[in-house]
Image (cartoon, rainbow over all chains, first blue to last red; front, side, top):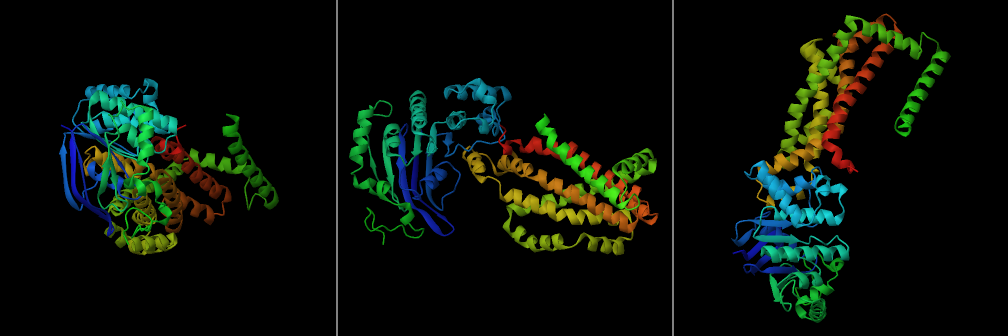
Length: 262
Length: 250
Protein backbone atom coordinates (compact mmCIF):
# COMPACT_ATOMS: atom_id res chain seq x y z
CA UNK A 1 0.00 0.00 0.00
CA UNK A 2 1.46 3.33 -0.97
CA UNK A 3 -1.45 5.67 -1.54
CA UNK A 4 -1.95 9.23 -0.42
CA UNK A 5 -5.15 11.15 0.18
CA UNK A 6 -5.20 14.90 0.57
CA UNK A 7 -8.70 15.90 1.64
CA UNK A 8 -10.01 19.48 1.48
CA UNK A 9 -6.60 21.04 2.09
CA UNK A 10 -6.52 24.80 2.63
CA UNK A 11 -3.46 26.87 3.39
CA UNK A 12 -2.61 30.56 3.63
CA UNK A 13 0.62 32.55 3.71
CA UNK A 14 0.30 35.90 5.50
CA UNK A 15 -3.47 36.00 5.07
CA UNK A 16 -3.22 35.18 1.36
CA UNK A 17 -5.00 31.93 0.64
CA UNK A 18 -2.78 29.78 -1.55
CA UNK A 19 -4.74 26.55 -1.39
CA UNK A 20 -8.48 26.44 -1.02
CA UNK A 21 -10.12 23.07 -0.28
CA UNK A 22 -7.88 21.05 -2.56
CA UNK A 23 -8.50 17.31 -2.63
CA UNK A 24 -6.38 14.73 -4.39
CA UNK A 25 -6.40 10.95 -4.11
CA UNK A 26 -3.39 8.96 -5.29
CA UNK A 27 -4.08 5.24 -5.38
CA UNK A 28 -1.49 2.70 -4.20
CA UNK A 29 1.29 2.34 -6.75
CA UNK A 30 -0.05 5.20 -8.85
CA UNK A 31 2.27 7.97 -10.04
CA UNK A 32 0.25 11.16 -10.45
CA UNK A 33 1.63 14.23 -12.17
CA UNK A 34 0.25 17.50 -10.89
CA UNK A 35 0.34 20.34 -13.40
CA UNK A 36 -0.80 23.93 -13.16
CA UNK A 37 0.39 27.45 -13.97
CA UNK A 38 3.13 29.13 -11.92
CA UNK A 39 1.97 30.31 -8.52
CA UNK A 40 -1.10 28.08 -8.36
CA UNK A 41 0.13 26.35 -5.19
CA UNK A 42 1.56 23.08 -6.56
CA UNK A 43 4.74 23.29 -4.51
CA UNK A 44 2.77 24.26 -1.40
CA UNK A 45 0.64 21.14 -1.88
CA UNK A 46 3.83 19.07 -2.32
CA UNK A 47 5.26 20.58 0.88
CA UNK A 48 2.06 19.65 2.72
CA UNK A 49 2.14 16.14 1.28
CA UNK A 50 5.80 15.85 2.32
CA UNK A 51 5.14 16.93 5.90
CA UNK A 52 7.08 20.18 5.60
CA UNK A 53 4.00 22.34 6.08
CA UNK A 54 0.96 21.73 8.22
CA UNK A 55 -2.17 22.78 6.37
CA UNK A 56 -4.51 25.30 7.97
CA UNK A 57 -7.40 22.97 7.22
CA UNK A 58 -7.90 19.54 5.77
CA UNK A 59 -6.71 15.99 6.33
CA UNK A 60 -3.81 13.96 5.01
CA UNK A 61 -4.08 10.17 4.91
CA UNK A 62 -0.81 8.42 4.20
CA UNK A 63 -1.09 4.74 3.36
CA UNK A 64 2.62 4.18 3.65
CA UNK A 65 5.38 4.15 6.24
CA UNK A 66 8.06 6.24 4.58
CA UNK A 67 8.23 8.78 1.83
CA UNK A 68 11.13 10.41 0.03
CA UNK A 69 11.17 13.83 -1.55
CA UNK A 70 13.13 15.23 -4.47
CA UNK A 71 13.22 19.02 -4.72
CA UNK A 72 13.68 21.70 -7.29
CA UNK A 73 17.40 22.65 -7.42
CA UNK A 74 18.29 19.48 -5.51
CA UNK A 75 18.66 21.14 -2.07
CA UNK A 76 21.87 19.31 -1.28
CA UNK A 77 23.91 20.27 1.78
CA UNK A 78 26.69 22.35 0.18
CA UNK A 79 29.29 21.45 2.83
CA UNK A 80 28.73 17.69 2.64
CA UNK A 81 30.04 15.22 0.08
CA UNK A 82 27.63 13.42 -2.25
CA UNK A 83 27.98 10.37 0.02
CA UNK A 84 27.06 12.33 3.15
CA UNK A 85 24.18 14.01 1.34
CA UNK A 86 22.72 10.65 0.35
CA UNK A 87 23.22 9.33 3.88
CA UNK A 88 21.72 12.41 5.53
CA UNK A 89 18.15 11.08 6.09
CA UNK A 90 19.58 7.91 7.64
CA UNK A 91 21.71 9.87 10.11
CA UNK A 92 18.48 11.24 11.58
CA UNK A 93 17.43 7.74 12.64
CA UNK A 94 19.01 5.06 14.77
CA UNK A 95 20.82 2.99 12.17
CA UNK A 96 24.36 1.78 12.75
CA UNK A 97 27.22 3.24 10.76
CA UNK A 98 27.59 -0.01 8.80
CA UNK A 99 23.91 -0.02 7.86
CA UNK A 100 24.09 3.61 6.77
CA UNK A 101 27.14 2.92 4.60
CA UNK A 102 25.52 -0.12 3.02
CA UNK A 103 22.26 1.62 2.20
CA UNK A 104 24.02 4.74 0.96
CA UNK A 105 26.07 2.71 -1.50
CA UNK A 106 22.99 0.80 -2.65
CA UNK A 107 21.11 4.06 -3.30
CA UNK A 108 24.10 5.57 -5.13
CA UNK A 109 24.34 2.46 -7.26
CA UNK A 110 20.63 2.59 -8.08
CA UNK A 111 21.07 6.04 -9.66
CA UNK A 112 24.34 5.06 -11.39
CA UNK A 113 26.62 7.32 -9.37
CA UNK A 114 30.27 6.32 -9.59
CA UNK A 115 32.33 5.76 -6.41
CA UNK A 116 34.58 8.67 -7.42
CA UNK A 117 31.59 11.03 -7.47
CA UNK A 118 30.63 10.20 -3.90
CA UNK A 119 33.53 12.11 -2.36
CA UNK A 120 32.77 15.30 -4.25
CA UNK A 121 30.97 18.33 -2.85
CA UNK A 122 27.76 19.44 -4.64
CA UNK A 123 29.63 22.42 -6.14
CA UNK A 124 31.97 19.97 -7.84
CA UNK A 125 29.13 18.01 -9.46
CA UNK A 126 27.27 18.75 -12.68
CA UNK A 127 23.54 19.52 -12.63
CA UNK A 128 22.71 15.97 -13.69
CA UNK A 129 24.90 14.47 -11.00
CA UNK A 130 23.31 16.69 -8.39
CA UNK A 131 19.88 15.49 -9.51
CA UNK A 132 21.08 11.89 -9.20
CA UNK A 133 22.37 12.55 -5.67
CA UNK A 134 19.02 14.12 -4.74
CA UNK A 135 17.15 11.08 -6.08
CA UNK A 136 19.53 8.72 -4.27
CA UNK A 137 18.90 10.67 -1.04
CA UNK A 138 15.18 10.12 -1.49
CA UNK A 139 15.69 6.42 -2.26
CA UNK A 140 17.99 5.74 0.68
CA UNK A 141 15.07 5.72 3.12
CA UNK A 142 13.52 2.89 1.05
CA UNK A 143 10.37 4.93 0.42
CA UNK A 144 7.04 3.50 -0.54
CA UNK A 145 5.96 6.88 -1.89
CA UNK A 146 7.99 9.56 -3.63
CA UNK A 147 7.22 13.26 -3.98
CA UNK A 148 8.95 15.14 -6.77
CA UNK A 149 8.71 18.94 -6.76
CA UNK A 150 9.80 20.04 -10.24
CA UNK A 151 13.12 18.24 -9.77
CA UNK A 152 14.37 18.54 -13.33
CA UNK A 153 13.10 22.02 -14.20
CA UNK A 154 16.62 23.48 -14.32
CA UNK A 155 18.13 20.74 -16.48
CA UNK A 156 18.61 20.83 -20.24
CA UNK A 157 16.20 18.69 -22.31
CA UNK A 158 18.59 15.77 -22.92
CA UNK A 159 19.55 15.55 -19.26
CA UNK A 160 15.96 15.91 -18.20
CA UNK A 161 15.04 12.99 -20.39
CA UNK A 162 17.77 10.85 -18.85
CA UNK A 163 16.51 11.71 -15.38
CA UNK A 164 12.94 10.85 -16.42
CA UNK A 165 14.19 7.47 -17.67
CA UNK A 166 15.87 6.97 -14.31
CA UNK A 167 12.61 7.71 -12.46
CA UNK A 168 10.71 5.36 -14.75
CA UNK A 169 13.15 2.50 -14.25
CA UNK A 170 13.23 3.02 -10.48
CA UNK A 171 9.43 3.19 -10.26
CA UNK A 172 9.19 -0.03 -12.27
CA UNK A 173 11.82 -1.82 -10.18
CA UNK A 174 10.56 -0.68 -6.80
CA UNK A 175 6.88 -0.19 -7.47
CA UNK A 176 6.49 3.03 -5.50
CA UNK A 177 3.64 5.44 -5.97
CA UNK A 178 4.21 9.13 -6.13
CA UNK A 179 3.29 12.71 -6.77
CA UNK A 180 5.24 14.49 -9.51
CA UNK A 181 4.91 18.27 -9.69
CA UNK A 182 5.79 19.70 -13.07
CA UNK A 183 5.07 22.48 -15.55
CA UNK A 184 5.97 20.30 -18.46
CA UNK A 185 3.05 18.47 -20.05
CA UNK A 186 5.38 16.16 -21.98
CA UNK A 187 7.20 15.20 -18.78
CA UNK A 188 3.87 14.58 -17.05
CA UNK A 189 2.64 12.42 -19.95
CA UNK A 190 5.86 10.42 -19.95
CA UNK A 191 6.08 9.70 -16.26
CA UNK A 192 2.61 9.43 -14.83
CA UNK A 193 -0.39 7.15 -14.79
CA UNK A 194 -2.62 10.20 -14.52
CA UNK A 195 -2.24 13.97 -14.86
CA UNK A 196 -4.13 16.06 -12.31
CA UNK A 197 -4.66 19.68 -13.26
CA UNK A 198 -4.69 22.31 -10.55
CA UNK A 199 -6.77 25.46 -10.62
CA UNK A 200 -4.61 28.51 -11.22
CA UNK A 201 -5.74 30.07 -7.95
CA UNK A 202 -5.34 26.91 -5.94
CA UNK A 203 -9.08 26.39 -5.69
CA UNK A 204 -8.97 22.65 -6.08
CA UNK A 205 -8.11 20.12 -8.73
CA UNK A 206 -9.95 20.93 -11.94
CA UNK A 207 -9.82 17.39 -13.26
CA UNK A 208 -7.55 14.66 -14.55
CA UNK A 209 -6.28 13.42 -17.88
CA UNK A 210 -5.08 9.88 -18.42
CA UNK A 211 -2.46 9.22 -21.06
CA UNK A 212 -2.82 5.89 -22.88
CA UNK A 213 -0.95 2.86 -21.53
CA UNK A 214 1.34 2.85 -18.52
CA UNK A 215 4.44 4.93 -17.73
CA UNK A 216 7.54 3.42 -19.27
CA UNK A 217 5.52 1.39 -21.77
CA UNK A 218 4.32 4.38 -23.82
CA UNK A 219 5.92 5.02 -27.15
CA UNK A 220 7.18 8.48 -28.05
CA UNK A 221 4.47 8.67 -30.72
CA UNK A 222 1.79 7.97 -28.11
CA UNK A 223 3.17 10.65 -25.81
CA UNK A 224 3.42 13.15 -28.65
CA UNK A 225 -0.13 12.45 -29.86
CA UNK A 226 -1.47 12.69 -26.33
CA UNK A 227 0.22 16.03 -25.59
CA UNK A 228 -0.87 17.49 -28.93
CA UNK A 229 -4.45 16.48 -28.27
CA UNK A 230 -4.33 17.61 -24.65
CA UNK A 231 -3.25 21.10 -25.68
CA UNK A 232 -6.77 21.71 -26.92
CA UNK A 233 -8.37 20.34 -23.76
CA UNK A 234 -10.11 23.08 -21.75
CA UNK A 235 -8.58 21.72 -18.51
CA UNK A 236 -5.14 22.75 -19.69
CA UNK A 237 -6.07 26.19 -21.00
CA UNK A 238 -4.58 28.03 -18.02
CA UNK A 239 -1.45 25.92 -17.96
CA UNK A 240 -0.70 26.72 -21.58
CA UNK A 241 -1.98 30.29 -21.81
CA UNK A 242 -1.63 32.14 -18.51
CA UNK A 243 0.89 34.92 -18.62
CA UNK A 244 2.23 35.05 -15.08
CA UNK A 245 3.12 38.74 -15.50
CA UNK A 246 -0.60 39.50 -15.88
CA UNK A 247 -1.50 37.61 -12.71
CA UNK A 248 -1.85 39.70 -9.58
CA UNK A 249 -1.38 38.23 -6.16
CA UNK A 250 -4.91 38.87 -4.99
CA UNK A 251 -6.87 37.90 -8.06
CA UNK A 252 -5.34 36.06 -10.94
CA UNK A 253 -8.06 37.26 -13.26
CA UNK A 254 -7.76 36.72 -16.96
CA UNK A 255 -11.17 37.15 -18.53
CA UNK A 256 -10.11 35.09 -21.51
CA UNK A 257 -9.09 32.19 -19.25
CA UNK A 258 -10.81 28.98 -18.47
CA UNK A 259 -11.67 30.08 -14.92
CA UNK A 260 -13.48 33.38 -14.69
CA UNK A 261 -12.74 34.51 -11.19
CA UNK A 262 -13.75 38.19 -11.30
CA UNK B 1 53.76 30.09 -5.88
CA UNK B 2 55.32 33.35 -7.16
CA UNK B 3 51.86 34.59 -8.06
CA UNK B 4 50.52 33.69 -4.61
CA UNK B 5 53.24 35.27 -2.51
CA UNK B 6 54.61 37.84 -4.97
CA UNK B 7 51.94 40.57 -4.69
CA UNK B 8 51.76 40.47 -0.85
CA UNK B 9 55.58 40.57 -0.65
CA UNK B 10 55.60 43.54 -3.02
CA UNK B 11 52.98 45.29 -0.85
CA UNK B 12 55.10 44.79 2.29
CA UNK B 13 58.23 45.97 0.45
CA UNK B 14 56.45 49.14 -0.73
CA UNK B 15 55.20 49.83 2.80
CA UNK B 16 58.70 49.41 4.27
CA UNK B 17 60.17 51.60 1.51
CA UNK B 18 57.67 54.38 2.24
CA UNK B 19 58.43 54.06 5.96
CA UNK B 20 62.17 54.26 5.31
CA UNK B 21 61.68 57.31 3.06
CA UNK B 22 59.59 59.01 5.74
CA UNK B 23 62.30 58.20 8.30
CA UNK B 24 64.95 59.86 6.09
CA UNK B 25 62.72 62.89 5.66
CA UNK B 26 61.63 63.40 9.29
CA UNK B 27 64.58 61.92 11.15
CA UNK B 28 64.92 59.20 13.80
CA UNK B 29 63.40 61.32 16.61
CA UNK B 30 60.04 61.60 14.84
CA UNK B 31 60.02 58.28 12.98
CA UNK B 32 62.58 55.55 13.62
CA UNK B 33 63.59 53.40 10.65
CA UNK B 34 62.16 49.89 10.21
CA UNK B 35 65.53 48.47 11.32
CA UNK B 36 65.56 50.56 14.53
CA UNK B 37 62.01 49.43 15.23
CA UNK B 38 63.00 45.82 14.66
CA UNK B 39 65.87 46.21 17.14
CA UNK B 40 63.51 47.73 19.73
CA UNK B 41 61.05 44.91 19.06
CA UNK B 42 63.78 42.34 19.62
CA UNK B 43 64.75 44.05 22.86
CA UNK B 44 61.14 43.95 24.04
CA UNK B 45 60.82 40.28 23.16
CA UNK B 46 64.11 39.53 24.94
CA UNK B 47 62.79 40.85 28.22
CA UNK B 48 60.38 39.14 30.59
CA UNK B 49 58.42 42.40 30.99
CA UNK B 50 57.81 42.52 27.22
CA UNK B 51 56.33 39.03 27.21
CA UNK B 52 54.32 39.82 30.34
CA UNK B 53 52.79 42.88 28.64
CA UNK B 54 52.03 40.90 25.51
CA UNK B 55 50.52 38.06 27.55
CA UNK B 56 48.39 40.46 29.61
CA UNK B 57 46.89 42.12 26.53
CA UNK B 58 46.34 38.86 24.66
CA UNK B 59 44.82 37.22 27.75
CA UNK B 60 42.35 40.08 28.23
CA UNK B 61 41.30 40.04 24.58
CA UNK B 62 40.87 36.25 24.66
CA UNK B 63 38.80 36.35 27.83
CA UNK B 64 36.65 39.24 26.61
CA UNK B 65 36.16 37.58 23.23
CA UNK B 66 35.08 34.38 24.98
CA UNK B 67 32.68 36.20 27.30
CA UNK B 68 31.09 38.39 24.68
CA UNK B 69 31.08 35.51 22.20
CA UNK B 70 29.11 33.47 24.71
CA UNK B 71 26.65 36.18 25.78
CA UNK B 72 26.36 38.00 22.43
CA UNK B 73 26.42 34.74 20.52
CA UNK B 74 23.68 33.03 22.51
CA UNK B 75 21.53 36.17 22.50
CA UNK B 76 22.12 36.58 18.77
CA UNK B 77 21.11 33.00 18.11
CA UNK B 78 17.90 33.38 20.12
CA UNK B 79 17.17 36.73 18.45
CA UNK B 80 17.80 35.21 15.03
CA UNK B 81 14.99 32.78 15.66
CA UNK B 82 12.59 34.90 17.71
CA UNK B 83 11.30 38.09 16.19
CA UNK B 84 10.18 39.54 19.53
CA UNK B 85 13.65 39.24 21.08
CA UNK B 86 15.21 40.63 17.91
CA UNK B 87 12.90 43.63 17.80
CA UNK B 88 13.42 44.29 21.52
CA UNK B 89 17.21 44.08 21.36
CA UNK B 90 17.65 45.95 18.05
CA UNK B 91 17.70 49.48 19.59
CA UNK B 92 19.90 48.29 22.46
CA UNK B 93 22.42 46.83 19.98
CA UNK B 94 22.36 50.05 17.95
CA UNK B 95 22.99 52.21 21.03
CA UNK B 96 25.84 49.97 22.19
CA UNK B 97 27.37 49.92 18.70
CA UNK B 98 27.21 53.70 18.41
CA UNK B 99 28.87 54.30 21.79
CA UNK B 100 32.48 55.38 21.22
CA UNK B 101 35.00 52.99 22.75
CA UNK B 102 36.70 55.90 24.52
CA UNK B 103 33.43 56.69 26.32
CA UNK B 104 33.39 53.14 27.69
CA UNK B 105 36.99 53.47 28.83
CA UNK B 106 36.12 56.59 30.85
CA UNK B 107 32.90 55.10 32.23
CA UNK B 108 34.49 51.80 33.26
CA UNK B 109 37.39 53.64 34.87
CA UNK B 110 34.86 55.51 37.01
CA UNK B 111 32.85 52.34 37.75
CA UNK B 112 35.64 49.85 38.37
CA UNK B 113 38.72 52.04 38.80
CA UNK B 114 41.82 51.64 36.59
CA UNK B 115 41.87 47.85 36.78
CA UNK B 116 41.96 44.63 34.83
CA UNK B 117 38.18 44.38 35.27
CA UNK B 118 37.51 47.76 33.68
CA UNK B 119 39.57 46.85 30.58
CA UNK B 120 37.88 43.47 30.29
CA UNK B 121 34.44 45.05 30.55
CA UNK B 122 35.34 47.70 27.95
CA UNK B 123 36.53 45.14 25.40
CA UNK B 124 33.52 42.88 26.00
CA UNK B 125 30.95 45.68 25.74
CA UNK B 126 32.51 47.01 22.52
CA UNK B 127 32.79 43.68 20.67
CA UNK B 128 29.69 42.00 22.17
CA UNK B 129 27.18 43.88 19.95
CA UNK B 130 29.26 43.06 16.85
CA UNK B 131 29.18 39.36 17.68
CA UNK B 132 25.47 39.62 18.50
CA UNK B 133 24.61 41.29 15.18
CA UNK B 134 26.84 38.85 13.29
CA UNK B 135 25.02 35.90 14.84
CA UNK B 136 21.57 37.41 14.21
CA UNK B 137 22.48 38.06 10.58
CA UNK B 138 23.91 34.56 10.17
CA UNK B 139 20.73 33.03 11.61
CA UNK B 140 18.48 35.15 9.40
CA UNK B 141 20.34 34.58 6.15
CA UNK B 142 20.66 30.81 6.45
CA UNK B 143 19.15 28.75 3.67
CA UNK B 144 15.86 27.60 5.19
CA UNK B 145 15.08 25.43 2.18
CA UNK B 146 17.68 22.99 3.46
CA UNK B 147 15.78 22.75 6.74
CA UNK B 148 12.59 22.07 4.75
CA UNK B 149 14.42 19.28 3.00
CA UNK B 150 15.37 17.80 6.37
CA UNK B 151 11.79 18.20 7.62
CA UNK B 152 10.54 16.16 4.66
CA UNK B 153 12.69 13.29 5.94
CA UNK B 154 11.21 13.63 9.42
CA UNK B 155 13.99 15.64 11.09
CA UNK B 156 12.89 17.14 14.39
CA UNK B 157 13.28 20.87 15.04
CA UNK B 158 16.40 20.18 17.15
CA UNK B 159 17.90 17.90 14.49
CA UNK B 160 17.32 20.58 11.86
CA UNK B 161 19.02 23.17 14.02
CA UNK B 162 21.93 20.90 14.96
CA UNK B 163 22.66 19.41 11.56
CA UNK B 164 21.80 22.26 9.21
CA UNK B 165 21.18 25.68 10.74
CA UNK B 166 24.12 25.67 13.16
CA UNK B 167 26.54 24.66 10.42
CA UNK B 168 25.46 27.56 8.24
CA UNK B 169 25.51 30.03 11.13
CA UNK B 170 29.01 29.03 12.25
CA UNK B 171 30.38 29.25 8.74
CA UNK B 172 29.24 32.89 8.54
CA UNK B 173 30.96 33.85 11.78
CA UNK B 174 34.61 33.67 10.69
CA UNK B 175 34.85 37.23 9.30
CA UNK B 176 32.85 38.61 12.25
CA UNK B 177 35.24 36.97 14.70
CA UNK B 178 38.17 38.41 12.75
CA UNK B 179 36.74 41.92 13.01
CA UNK B 180 35.87 41.45 16.69
CA UNK B 181 39.37 40.23 17.45
CA UNK B 182 41.06 43.16 15.71
CA UNK B 183 38.72 45.65 17.35
CA UNK B 184 39.15 43.96 20.73
CA UNK B 185 42.90 44.39 20.41
CA UNK B 186 42.64 48.05 19.54
CA UNK B 187 40.25 48.70 22.41
CA UNK B 188 42.44 46.72 24.84
CA UNK B 189 45.54 48.74 23.95
CA UNK B 190 43.62 52.01 24.18
CA UNK B 191 42.09 51.10 27.54
CA UNK B 192 45.48 49.95 28.91
CA UNK B 193 47.04 53.17 27.69
CA UNK B 194 44.42 55.32 29.44
CA UNK B 195 44.22 53.26 32.64
CA UNK B 196 47.94 52.46 32.72
CA UNK B 197 47.24 48.86 33.68
CA UNK B 198 49.88 46.30 32.64
CA UNK B 199 49.85 45.43 28.96
CA UNK B 200 51.00 46.68 25.57
CA UNK B 201 48.99 49.89 26.05
CA UNK B 202 50.75 50.60 29.37
CA UNK B 203 54.11 50.01 27.65
CA UNK B 204 53.11 52.59 25.07
CA UNK B 205 52.10 55.03 27.79
CA UNK B 206 55.53 54.56 29.32
CA UNK B 207 57.22 55.05 25.93
CA UNK B 208 55.25 58.26 25.46
CA UNK B 209 56.25 59.50 28.93
CA UNK B 210 59.92 58.82 28.14
CA UNK B 211 59.56 60.11 24.56
CA UNK B 212 60.88 56.68 23.50
CA UNK B 213 59.54 56.52 19.94
CA UNK B 214 61.47 53.28 19.20
CA UNK B 215 59.71 51.48 22.04
CA UNK B 216 56.32 52.92 21.06
CA UNK B 217 56.68 51.70 17.50
CA UNK B 218 58.05 48.35 18.69
CA UNK B 219 54.86 47.87 20.73
CA UNK B 220 52.71 48.81 17.76
CA UNK B 221 54.63 46.30 15.62
CA UNK B 222 54.21 43.69 18.35
CA UNK B 223 50.45 44.22 18.48
CA UNK B 224 50.14 44.03 14.69
CA UNK B 225 52.35 40.94 14.49
CA UNK B 226 50.36 39.28 17.29
CA UNK B 227 47.09 39.98 15.47
CA UNK B 228 48.43 38.63 12.19
CA UNK B 229 49.67 35.47 13.91
CA UNK B 230 46.33 34.90 15.67
CA UNK B 231 44.42 35.52 12.46
CA UNK B 232 46.50 32.96 10.59
CA UNK B 233 46.63 30.40 13.38
CA UNK B 234 43.06 30.64 14.68
CA UNK B 235 40.63 32.65 12.53
CA UNK B 236 41.70 31.51 9.04
CA UNK B 237 41.79 27.75 9.87
CA UNK B 238 38.35 28.17 11.50
CA UNK B 239 37.05 29.90 8.37
CA UNK B 240 38.63 27.32 6.09
CA UNK B 241 37.22 24.44 8.08
CA UNK B 242 33.67 25.74 8.25
CA UNK B 243 33.34 27.93 5.20
CA UNK B 244 35.21 26.17 2.40
CA UNK B 245 31.98 25.15 0.71
CA UNK B 246 30.96 28.81 0.42
CA UNK B 247 33.92 29.48 -1.85
CA UNK B 248 32.79 26.79 -4.26
CA UNK B 249 35.37 24.21 -3.15
CA UNK B 250 36.71 24.06 -6.69
